[in-house]
Image 1 (cartoon, rainbow, N blue to C red):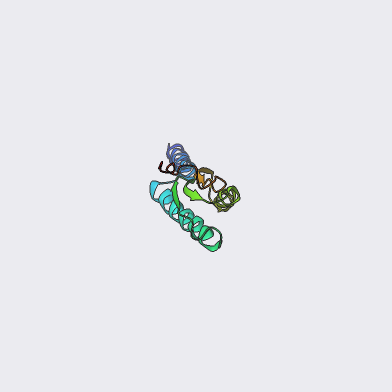
Image 2: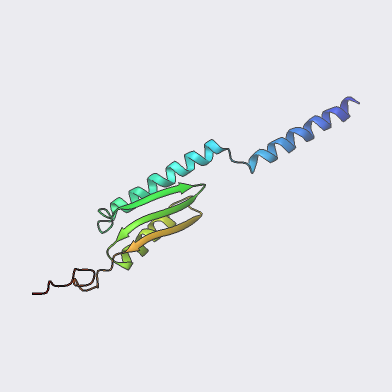
Amino acid sequence: MAARSGLLGMGMALSLALGMVGCRSAADAALDDAAILADVRRGLAEDVRLARSPIRVDVERGEVTLEGRVDRAELKEEAERIARHVEGVDRVTSRIEVADAGLPASIGASPPARP
């Protein structure tokens, strides 16, 4: 009987240990997200072309969301690339808009006054 209860106890301990290996606590996830946020922000700040761009970064459970506006499509792509290459990032969602730098200045302007 003692051997049986000893095996039962070991089995329960093993099950508990294995269950905890695949389980991340909310605190661990928050710490990971904070590190990812810092690394993405640092990467964007270190790129001289993106440093002055108003790009907001949010991270939740390893998923990065980028929001803001840049002047050119290649800057949007570079911001996305920087975020994707940060350790711990599972997915990047980009809501970065590209300014319509190629539009003539007259578009959206008031029509000329009539004499």
